Length: 268
Image (tube, rainbow, N blue to C red):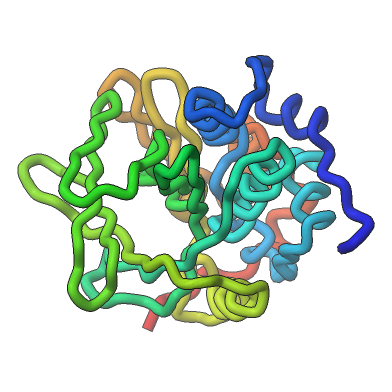
């Protein structure tokens, strides 16, 4: 949209950011952290049969003004708009998800930011395993943040592979390369991810939000809170209280009735 102007103040208020704005790494890390801990990962519009719109005005309306969350194409789409508005050199990349062992198509959107010649990967849209800090584009350099360790390795076929350490094992999350991404590429990924029955976002209800000393996640009716290493699992009821519990856990109010949710599907 040629007449679109990113609402900087509204965005900063939405992510509870009150720091000093600059185009250095310290500010990049602060903005990344602020959005990560303020806007949840969630797919309820897909579960309600609603279209996922990625134009700038729609992203701002949903995630900023309506105080909802979203999935990778929305969360990282909003982050990209914000970073560009604040003067950062940033562009989108698309990746293939590898967590099942079978790579998907290029449907996972992330952000590439360059500061004084150094490149950083930013991703707020991978649920509970989203990197909590920007990851430098350097191979085999573990990045440790609190109880999480990530690294990038060189994959002969797929390019960069992001891994998350679990115990003594490294788990492949997703791969990506640095090729140019145009709006049409993102539209293709968005359509498949939000409509295909084999997509986890179509077949299940998911959400995640980092909180102080822990993480809150949702998978269908299981709401899990892990705080200070202690796990609590709450089984949500199949009635309107479901949305009330979602509002309490993730700070989002969904304008719908429980009966509006599509039946859960089994991924083939």
